[in-house]
Amino acid sequence: MRTSHLITHLISLTGVLAFLWLHIPLPWLFGPMFACLLAALFGVKLSVIKPLSEGMRTILGVAVGASVTTAFFVALPGIWDTLILIPFMVIGIGVMGVWYFQRFAGYDFATSYYASMPGGLQDMIAFGEEAGGNVRAISLIHATRVLVIVVILPLILTQFWDANLDTPPGASVTTFELDQIAILTICGLAGWRIAKRIGMFGSSILGPLILTAIASLAGILHTRPPAEAIWAAQYFIAIGIGAKYVGITSKELRHDVVAGLGFCVVLLVLTSVVVLGVFALDLAPPMETILSLAPGGQAELVVLALIVGADMGFVVAHHLFRIFFVILGAPVIAKLFDPKQTG
Image 1: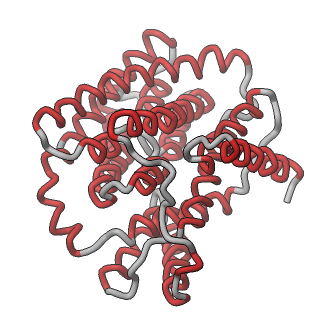
Image 2: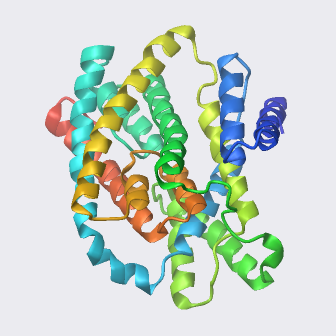
C-alpha cells in the first residue's frame, strides 16, 4: 500500500470520527467525503485502490439484488407511469445542459453534451474522450453533480418527510448465519468478475445484483448484507467522490466546478418540476419519487434508499432504466445533434 493510500484512509477515518463525535447523520458517508474533499482542495495527494473500491461497490449490488423477489416483478407494470418519465427527463436535462454549458461556460459540444448526461460517470468520460471533449472538465462537473445531490437529498428527506438517517442500514453481522454470509459473498465477488469478463457496464454493481437476485428468487438467500458492510460501502464511495478533486487548479475551481454548480441549479429546477407533477397526480410515494428521479449517482442513491428504508425495488428500477437509457442512447443522440461526432 502506497503512502498516499495510507494518508487517504487516515484523513477519511478522521472525518468519520469527527462526524461521529459531532453526531452528524451519515458519518460513514459525509465524514470521509468532506474530509477528502477538503484535503484535495488543499493539495493533498489522495489516491484510491481501484479494485478495492470497485469491490466495495459490489455490496450495493448484492443489497439491491437481495430485494428482488417475485413481488418485485409483479409490481413492475404498476410503476410504468413514473418509469416513462425517465427518457423525457434525460432528454430535457441533456438539451438544457448543452445549452447552458455552451452559452455560459464556453465548452464545445462534446464536453457540454457528455457533462450533461445524468448517469454512467465512467462511461460518459470514455464517450466524451472519444468524441474529443475535455475529460477533466467532464469528470469535475459530474463529481460536483454527485456531491451536491448527496448533500442536498438527505436534508430534503429529513426536513420534509422526517427520514431517520441514524437507523442502521441492516442487522449486525453477528446475527447472520454463516451460510447467508457465504452466499452474499459469493454472489458479490462472482457476479462482479463474471460481469467484468463479459464487458458489462457497471459490472461491480450490476453483476452482483443479477446473481444475488437469482439467489433470492431461488429461495436460498433470505437477507440483505449486514450493516457493517453497508457502512464500508458508504466509506469507499465517499472517498471516491472526494478524491476526484485531487490536483484541481484554481482555474478549474473557478471555471469547471462553478459551471458544475450552476448546472446543479438547472437540474434542481427540472427535477423539481417533474417531482411536483408526480406529487400532484399522486403517482408514487414522495420519498421514493425523489430518490428515484434525482439525477445522482446510482451507488450513492442506493445507499440513501437503504438508509431511509425506501422501497428498493421501486428506486432501483428507475435508476437502472435511467442508466441503460443514458449509456445506450447517449452516443446515438450525440450523433443526431452533431454528425461530426464519432463516439
